[in-house]
Image 1: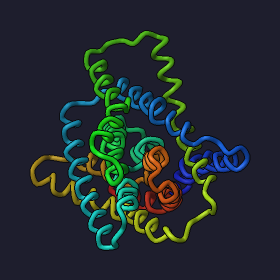
Image 2: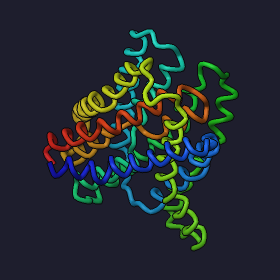
Image 3: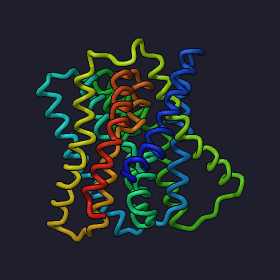
Image 4: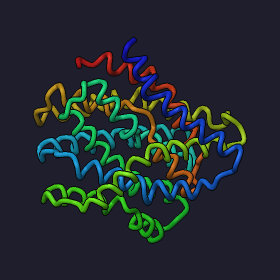
Amino acid sequence: MDIFLHVLWNNVLPLSLLICIGIVMQRIFRLDIRTLSKMNFYLFSPALMFDLLYTTSISGKLFGSVLLFFVLFMVAQYTLVEIVGRLRGTDGARRAAMRNAVLFYNSANYGIPINQLAFSNNVYTQSIQIIIMMMQSLIPNTYGIYSVNAHKSNWRQIRKVILSMPIIYVIPLALILHGFETPLPGFIETSVGYLSNAFIGTALFTLGVQLGSMSSGFNMKIAVDVGIATTLRLAVGPLLAWGAIFVLRLFMDIDDLTAAALIVSSAVPTSLSSVLLAVEFDSEPDFASQTVLATTAASLITVTTVIYLLPI
């Protein structure tokens, strides 16, 4: 019960409040969601990632282990979603949106607090979560952009968009500066901190604006697909993570604490990145928004259950 109340009070309710503010503001003022989307993609998200990677110490061995897990886990998720989409005969745009809803999960403003709760602010498990967050920032800005545009644009156009994403340059820059212990000028460090702190609020507000721009609260035509995506993300996701760890343990040593941290990281709801991509490139924004809302609400039960079942 303590975990349930903690997740509700410290994760679900704060997220819900900011989303509701966005819905109300959109209903009153009809805001420009494309501008909000661009601010998240080109300003706040890169600043957050730079800030975290620049200030966090991560060993090469841990980085390699988590990266191997992440690749195996993502391949398993992708394969499953693709099979489900093809069996249902889902069209290209919807199938891409469903892939993004399952593959991209909220490793930042949901995953980090959950990690801190489940592992009592353990520095080691927080490092694992930050590596996952780095990959969950990189993939939507590369593969995610390709996924939502592949059915309507050629590779040259898609490549141009991907290369314009700051995040693909920010990640190596932060790692290099951290590795060489290069100090930042005070005014730059302060500015990055301001922008980093603005990401979560702005991204949640953007989700609310998108939900507020919909003609109805929930579109029944896509309710089934939203339900499938929610099940794959919250229920099947942790099971696939457990399977990936089982396979990796056949070839390498992964201790119980690392395994538990990786499973918890896989149990969180759909990332706001899926909504930002859908809005920015006009690819199933209603489906993406409703899936984020549904997975965030349902995670109150599913995340609590995953933490309860793990030997933490």
